[in-house]
Length: 596
Image (tube, rainbow, N blue to C red; front, side, top):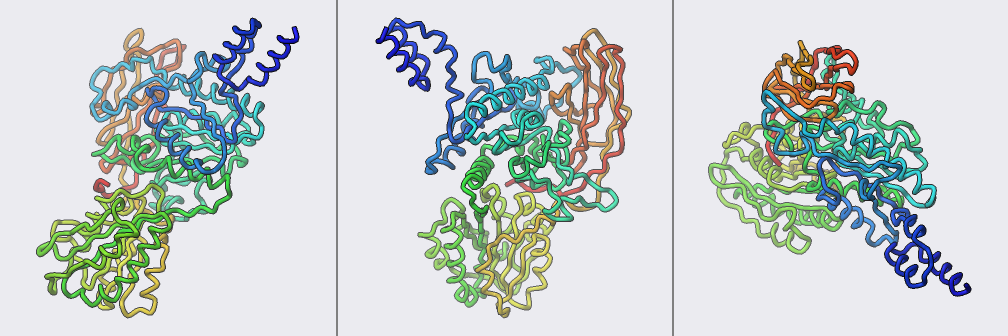
């Protein structure tokens, strides 16, 4: 008996070991500890930080987005001395409180399907189960957080989710006490709501772009699209249920992400939504949490791309400013930023040349590369500043969330359009799409006016060789971009949805027809984003009329902006179409941009 009591004490102190190890002790000692092993759950081991993650639609547990995010998160804290525990929703067999996040694969989440027209007949294959999946995931998350926070009150709980998983996080916030959550990170949330992005057709502007950061939602972490208003599924209003969540909720929505922003690149329907794992968004969000915990003032890294005019007339100017350029480049690199170096001239005489990019420029080689610039050719013709700037911005892999700048050093004015057809409007558009990129120019006093439009459009500045503050250019932090500036600008474009007709056509099918002046329409059934319609009629199958059926549409305008989502329902009882009020959607216009 004494031996047994002693061994029970051993087992009590081994409660944080693997269940299999506890079972081996019980078998060896002949004690009945099966109940103890069964009740043990390693997911409730206390750690300094507990990360709870929700995956996207159709993803397996531990998929690539989960891997990239957790790698970034663990990397941010690798030298912190803090312990980190991770639970991915749906991991525990049987779930919690009977709920286990299933994350079924549907429609848009199978990337290759979206650009293909759905055609005359569509079946979801999962009986339109997206909405139920989100609810079950939220129930699991709420139960897990409440139980874990009770067991580990000193642990900092961080929620994170991508796509459908982001919606699970934002839905969970509606039921969780803010005191239990340290941070909540959402990436590409279909229910994102940013009231400052609502387009005002009377002023052709939005508060997000015209009145500065002061009116931005407190959870707007990185949403470069000024017209991002409601996600494709309509948005949770309010998105952040309490002001007590201020500083805790951080929403990330990439430019031309059809799921959460207003703009869609017609040539890259999926790239915005699918690229969070490649752009560095997870690294930036993880560092944000690190900075919160250690109370570090946010200081974004810098990306500086230097473009030197290397025509013969530049000999004196390069000689005068190359040492300051080297000093500025080294400062950016020493602070963890990135530098790239290009040369250019007139395209009819010389090509734009890359000397090093963001991955190959270093503190060790930047001096020799700048000193090695050789001038040649040139004359009185304007130089290819626009083509050089555009090519450089397009080629480089800019860091997510960084302050991004181009520094042009030249003694001659730009061509507009350039010799290859590149226009000022294209340069401006690409600079804003990237996040944006501010363009600074150092030139002769006689050329200053020629660059004023380029620098003002990109919120940079012109410096001249005669200015007393010319050298101040090389002391700038290259971060002057004012979020009040808008890159979704120009005359509004109208996109409409009208004469929507949804009716039963069989025991489990319905016919849908509508009219639109857009180039196509996104189709959604019971929150399943099925794909992109290139026809105005569709037959829906596998519907369950024992439940209310909701069919939603979002039209896409000729320049790639989607309207607010408009819905119709078939009642579970009466089986009749019940139309929502459809008003004309006024969509902002932006020029088509190049790739990056």
